[in-house]
Amino acid sequence: MGEEEDTSELLEFLVARIPTAKAKRGHLNRGPITEVVIDVEGRTFRARVKDESLELAPPVHLTAWVDLLLTKLSDAAAADADMRRAVLRSGWALR
Image (cartoon, rainbow, N blue to C red; front, top):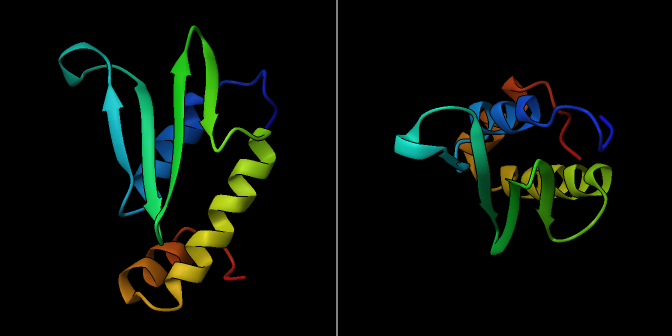
């Protein structure tokens, strides 16, 4: 996925597949997801739509952000059965 592509699908996918993901939507909690926050082993990953662009924390390229998130989720899955089940059910390989 490139930076210019529609990222709403990515945010929806992450919220649907990661049990600890917290999502915020538009006014009255309706519409597309505007922010996703995922806490993994003491590290917070945030993706939010701001002025029609995606703002990431930690502030790295989208591909690196997803890779870092998946690495941390894989590490967390080693100790948490629910997380391991969610990661494997999503089709991600444990690293």
